[in-house]
Image 1 (tube, rainbow, N blue to C red):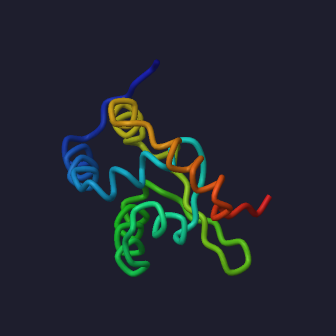
Image 2 (cartoon, rainbow, N blue to C red):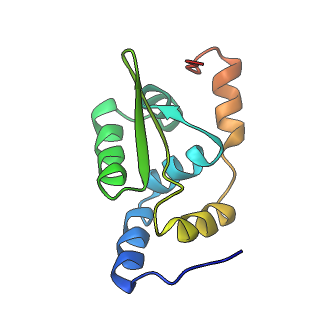
Length: 114
C-alpha cells in the first residue's frame, strides 16, 4: 500500500476526533457502507441530537460525507480524505460492527434507498 506522509497537525486532529468512543464506533460502522442518522440512534442507543453533533464534527473535519435521499440523510466514509490511511488502519484494529448492522437489518429497521 502506498502511504503518503500527512502533517502532524492533521494526524493529531483526526486522532483526537477518533479518540471519542461514539465517533470511533460511527466510523467503524461506516467501514462497509453508509448509514442513516436514525440507524446510529438505534445502534448506539443515543438521542438524535447527540448523534447529529458527533456526525457534524466528523463531517466538518471531512472524514465523512453525507448524501440526501428524500427525508433521509446517509453518511459514508470519505475515502478521499488525505488522512484516510490513518482511519483505515484504526478501523482494522477495533471490533467489527457488521453484526450490529446485520441485527438491525434482521429486525427490519435498516433503511435502504437503492
